[in-house]
Image 1 (cartoon, rainbow, N blue to C red):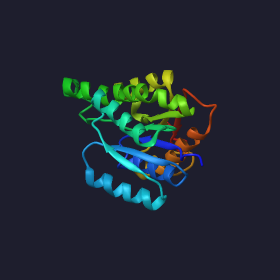
Image 2: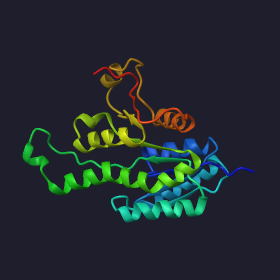
Image 3: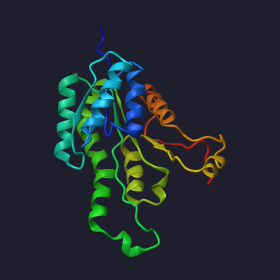
Image 4: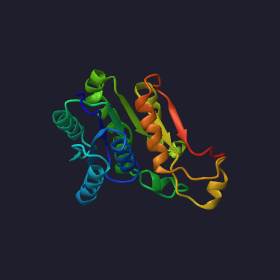
Length: 220
């Protein structure tokens, strides 16, 4: 009997990561997900995953701002599962400041953390998981934001991933009615919509290096 395919989801205990974890669990995958500090939220998701499907899902705590921790996450995951079929790299970080004031946007610590979390962490994870994904002909999927034009690190992430992996660039914003009215479909993008696209990419062997915008046809 063939082993269940395995997905590793980073930043998986909430938001899009949580939605993807649940969606893949319902579609035959064994789910390993990462969390940083909220153990209670991670435990809640683990319970939900086991209700969604009777598989040995599990979580691992790791701080993905550390390359050493990224490596440990991958080693422990592969050690428990023996395989990796999909990696969904969803970690990210932002700090909102006054965009009209240059001096409010020159904090070195903000720039360093944004670049580490939004660019380097994805590259570290890709490097650590590539040998395992090669064994299963698996795929690496990461998310960015339609705000990339305004966030240097997010734009850098997009261009980096165009060169090395399959990518999904979701437009997930719970905004006002005027935002919805500017979409061709007259609806908000749901987390489940993006999760379904990630599953589609995992199944399709002929797509790579693309940036897919999921925004319900938002007119800019």
